[in-house]
Image 1: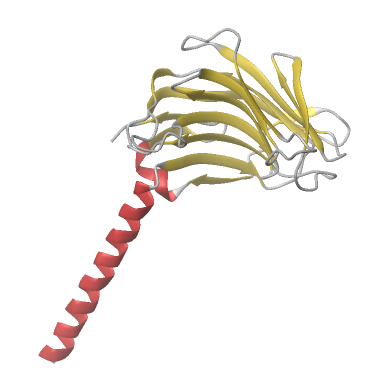
Image 2 (image 1 turned 90 degrees about the horizontal axis):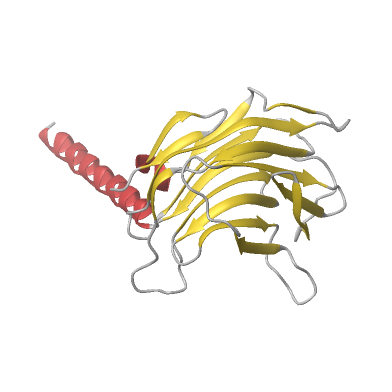
Length: 225
């Protein structure tokens, strides 16, 4: 009986150690995101983004190719994502990412905002599926980019709102970033409220860092550890 108990204790200890290693390894990646997606398919998504306060972002300390960032965007499934992001060397940017660029196809563009915003500044962001393998990003009602997707985009997709970070040193932070007035585009071209039937994820490697007072519409703060 004692032998069985000893074996159980040893196995339990090993399991705890494995789980601890797994959590530490995940946290060390420096990546995290809060994602809210629809369970039904739509033809676009739009909403108002409010710039957070208390923003602090760092790059990787030894690898200059790994740029720390925070990003707030709308998406058409995993195919196209567009919105507003911040990096320490450039500041606030607008971007549309529909895959990697090639010699014959532009699918990814990121450009600094002409006027750097202050906390509380709002932007209306709209991402439209053109059903011809392209997507269009509008900011404050003006078309910014229409890009070709690197994968098929010829039918409706689920749509999403996301807050994300790349944080190699676990020091990035911001307070009260939020989406509001988020609506989805229907087949007839009308926009209706982002539905209550959602799939939400706080990705495991960022879970401890996020404070999320609202998922729909998405609102969050990022806490440095």
